Image (cartoon, rainbow, N blue to C red; front, top):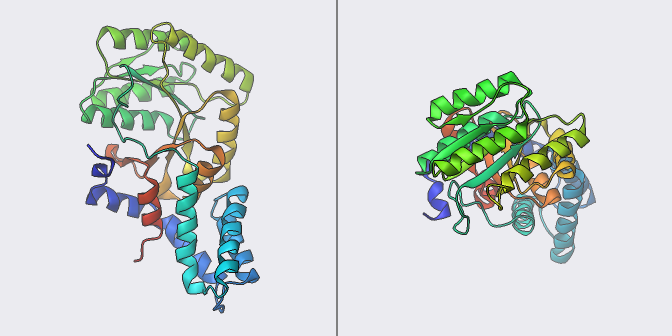
Length: 319
């Protein structure tokens, strides 16, 4: 299945709808930034810089985009404000292309992976981590894979209960232990059961405590090490879940988790309820970690593979 087979008309409509608030806020700000101006000058660029920063693109990424636009304006001399939207689109698309790996394969196990494909999910409480795991389990099962879930966030009863509910909804087994159990032990049991039952995909939920980074780092390291005893390549993916609606706070969480453990991919949730979708651009650029999935609603189908092309096309789509 080709990547863009995932982007049916229905998926594109979901993406367009999910980015509506971001798009409306973004372009209303740009309209104000160029009001009364016919040519892109220093004032327009200063205003555009403010637009990007207040749209949660982030300072470093904003300065990079502005610098590129300045170079184009200097080269082309008489760039009009009517052309600004197209130039901005090109530069954002270029930035995402340069600072990310290839678009995700969607809900397909990479061809070079020996099953089970193990995803360890990290992120602070409240970002939609457990819900994201449930949606991923649904999508992988729908794609024809046998999925096992591990409830290794043993410090919150609600997290275990929520994962069990998702397991029942999706129809996949959830491996758990009593509250307060060693998370690494849960991960070990989950992977052991998955291997014994010829599972294709294993998704491990982990605790989201950031107030004591050393403990978190030690815990995540221990979980990784015990899984390697069963499968030397595990985990194949360490996915950080971020709440897109928190804007700059998501940047800080990405920074802190990157210090605590290696992060190999990201999922950004709750983009449908916020005007802060610009955070996807900044985080992709600054952390050089691929955004694999974006959350655009409450339904199980509303977790989409992230496509740089589709994201930019939707954000800049003419109404």
